[in-house]
Length: 223
Figure 1 (cartoon, rainbow, N blue to C red):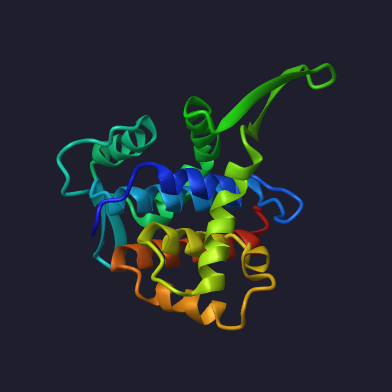
Figure 2: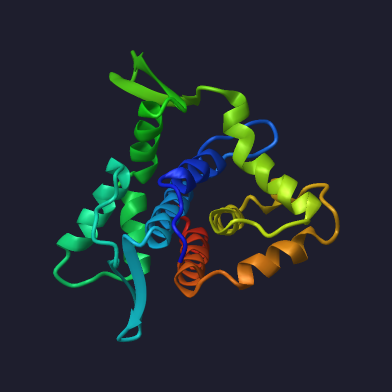
């Protein structure tokens, strides 16, 4: 697969799933964590740092063919976790772990360092604890990922980049299809489906497990 800049996909996935505004509803933290976990795994699969293969009836995550570790600390954290496992874990286990391990906060802190988010703290007198929140440093940058995908779906005049096609998959999986496709031409969904159908096999696998994980959480009420 071709190389992709790291960690653009995870940043865009954060802005899609964890940042909400008037036009885009909030996604629950756990579902956002699942989406971000899938995005981080996909980013590292695209860059060659991780691989996804079926083995023994399960879709497992392995260290990838690229010998050099990721240059960013977020990608390095996950690659080292995968390498440290004696027995390789399945994709659903990694998605659930990343959601529980609060990949959302880890991504937000990474974006603060990159200058994309602003971190603020507020001391609660009643809860006797400090509440941390993250806001976009620039509202236009925060809205850019969704606007970019909507522009591509509106014009339908060229092929979507691979990372945007997977970002589209994440956006749909976490339940944001309505703001994504609102008031777009009638052929937009067919155009999107055409890109989703031809995602490389490892990304198709990640997409399928993300959809299943979100659905399972909706059934069990763990949203």
